Structures are given as C-alpha cells and as structure tokens.
Length: 617
Image (cartoon, rainbow, N blue to C red; front, top):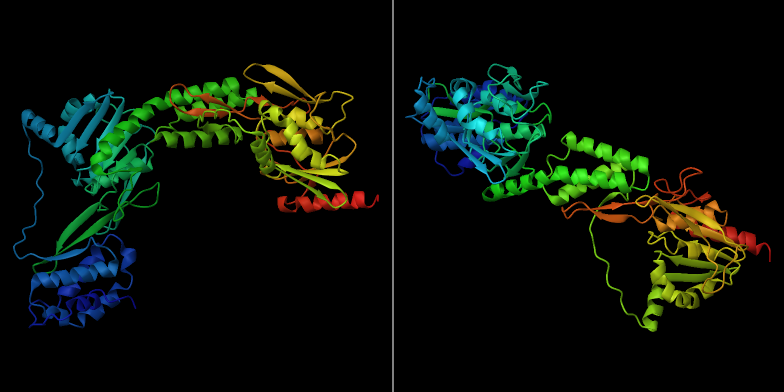
C-alpha cells in the first residue's frame, strides 16, 4: 500500500506534542485529501491516494491538536512528503480574505504611459545593445489595451538595436497568456511554433500555446543575438518564457538557476474551516524537450552570479558581433590554402551556410567558438588536422654540448638486435632536416651503426606521431642503393601552386642499408603525419612489408594561419602527396600488408623473419 497520506508523516513530526480535545472537524483530512486528488497538477503521482485517505480518516488522533497553525504545519509536511512536492502547503488563516480579480479599468493615455514607464525599464547600451527589463509578464487582456503604447514607447526603440538583453532577474509574476506574445516578437512569423503545452488539472484539459503569425508592430530579427538574464528570483511565468526561448535555441540564458516555481498555483479553502491549501493546479510540458522547468528551475547556458549577469551578457554579445567576420575569414583561408582545392572550396561554402543558418549565434566564449569551429571543420572535411589551434612560438635553438646531444639521441631512439641478427629501430618523431643535419653523424655513430649490419630490420613506428617531413627523403635513401636516383613522391603545395619532387639523396652520413635486405615496418592507428608519408613511400615502392594497424589518416604537417585580428588560429594542411594514381594516405591512412593488433605486431614480424632467415642458415 502507498504510504499513508498525512497520518504517518504527521505523527512522526508531532513527537511529544500533547494532544488536546478535538478542535477541528473530523472531515478536515478527508476534505484536504479530496482537494489534492481533484486539483493537483500531476495525477499520476496520486496513485494509491484513496487507500491513504481511508487509513488517515480512520484515525483522528492528529485532529486532537488545538493549535491551528501547528496542525497546518503538520498537514503541510504530510502532503509534501507523500507527493515529494514542496509546493503544496497548508495554512491556517481565520482572517484570510480571498483576492477578487478585477479587470483593468479604462485609464487615460498619460496614466498608461506612467504605468508602463515605471514597470518596464528600457535602455540602449554602448555598442547599440538593447536592454529591456520587465518585472511582470503582462497577460493577453492587458496587452491588448496597452499594446499600441507598448509598441510606441518601448518596442520601437528596441527594434533598431544590434542585440537584445532581456532581463528577467526580478520577474516573479505574470500571466500565462502573455507567453505567446513575448516568444512571437522574438521569433519568425512562419512557421507557427508550438511553444508550450499547459495541462490544467481541474478541467482536465491541455492547452497548446502557439506562436502568433500576426502581431502589432515588427518582430525582432532572429539574426540578432538575444540574451535572457535570470536569477534565483526569476519565478513562474518568467521561467516558462526563459525555458521556451532556450529550448527553441533562440536565446542564451545567462545568470543563476531560476526558482523552480509553477505555471499556476491556486489557494483553495478546505471545507468550512479556516484552513487553506496552496497547490499547483496546472503544469507546463515543453513540446521540444518533453520536460519542464517547474520544481527544477531553468539552468543557464552560462552560470554566473546575478550581479555579474549583465556584464557577462555584454561580453558575449561583443564576441558574437565578431563571429561572422571570424567565420568568413576562416572560410576564405581554407578555400585558398587547404591542400585539396575542391575539398577546401566545399568546406568553405558549407561553413558559410552554417553561419547563415545561425549555428554560431549562441557561442558564449572564445574557447566555445574554437571548440565548435574545430568540430564543424572535422565534420565537414573528415580531416582531423583541419582545426583551430594555438600559436605557440618556436623555442629558440638550445646550445647542447656533444655529450648532451648523445644522451638526447639515446633517449629519442631505441635499438636492439634480435635472434638471427634481426635489427630493431624505434623512434617516435621525425625531426626537421635542418635540425637533424648538424647531428647526423652523432645519430649514425650511436644509433644507426648498431643496426646497419643486421640481416633484416624491423622499423617500429607504432608510436610515431609524425613531425617534419623534410627529413623523409634522407631517411628513405638509407634503404635504397646509391647508384641511381629514385623518385619517392610528388608533393603539391596549395598556397604556392607548386609541386616538389621528393627524391633519394646521393650523399648520406654513414653506410646505406641498401635495397637487398628485408625490411618490415610496424604501424598502429596512432602512426600519423610524416610517419605515414614514410610508410606510404616504402609500401608504394615495394621496399618494405607493413605489419600492424591502418595508420591514422592524418596529413602532411599543417601550417598555422591567424584568423584576422581575432587571436584565433587555424591549423590547415597545405600539402598533399601525389594523387595521380588515386588517393595517397591523407584522410584514409596506410593499410598494412598483414593486419595485426598493434601490441602483437612485433611478435608477428619477428616470427616472419625467424622463419625466413632462420630457415636459410
């Protein structure tokens, strides 16, 4: 059985309270329960209530409390505990006089002007930013009477602004019928939007709130930024307005989480007593989210203290004003510099479409913009290297002693000689040619000479993340004979429109490994960039067997471009390998001859060499 509605929770609270002679009618609990049963906004939570009522009304001990206020507190706790809803409260008010709704009387124009000017705050901030504060959401009845004045005195001054800050931090009251008006002035006329659904429990009806296709005055352009300010004092209908605009992705909410009130709360008399129960009799169900803001409140997109919300909103709007220029400049940079011209043009066009469709309209910080731009570029291009980046200046060259160079090289390379004189060489980054050239002889003496005289070699690039491609030709040259020059690849540079041939070198530091001895290269899905170029060349020319996983499908080292004066930078691949015979490795990776899990690839390679070389001995 469901927990008893009032009695259990009430008696637990009473503790040592002395029970006096019954002062209240025995039907009090039953009348209270029936009001909740017939009016509470979420009937699904009332399952089992009839049994609770029967159990509660069969025991009248709780009614032996002579203090009405104490009894009201006990009953409040009972209903709140049973329904897990703090909005239900019971009060004891012998002198309470229910408020009578009065229609707004006809007022002279000058008095209406005074009322509007005192209840609505309007300002035009620096940068042509509109500021509008409303502390009470007007309903349809009032809006129709003051509409022309409202448009003339307030709205027409807001329309020319470049952005709008709508301040609901102090809005604690309002009328449901005003919601469609506010939302409609901030959205497009067509199509008509289903804004909200309001379920009214007493009538058991659901009303759909729809946007209005016809309005008095013009609408605020949806291309202009809209920020709604909230605080913990934002309550009721104003929460619904904020939640609707947020769900429609029309506004960015800045400030504090709202109160978590109700769309409608009624105060009903309990029978013929002086007790009253206040409870939510209607509830909001947003058609977009399928959820509600009631009880939980509206969570801001940018959460800051209420006192900092306005300054934060201004900063966001100033950033959003720069966004179109940043996106346009990014599109131009990609179109003019991306390695694959047709792809770059397509990405640029689609990026501009995203901007035109408002995809960047709710960006709230520079980091958010960079994150979104990177994600969009990856989606549009399929290239992980096309993204936003930081412009970290190159470190000045360090002066190393010969001993320090030797230790650094030993750390950067790993060598071994396995059974059957199989050489093993691992390094996790390709160096720049100009940086490697001065220390080439040291690398030969302390690394290369350890493996050059082996019968076969395993080159482990499973953890090689790339680096510079300028040393690729030199490294490849060690694995070919020096009697003839070999074309390794053709590299097309988009910004200059030139093609560079990558060929083996005539002169090398140290002895060549040559083209006769067997070579296996190990790869993983982490193998990227320059390492992929090396693997691609060696596989294409039939010089090495590749074992492991398909490589990352990265790009040649990208260049960094500043996006105007925004302090945002783009990483753009500008070079691609020869594609006359089809796609090279960029974007797709290099497929191994023998697929193997990365952690198993070395043993597979050793097994092949041991069988091949060991069998010859």
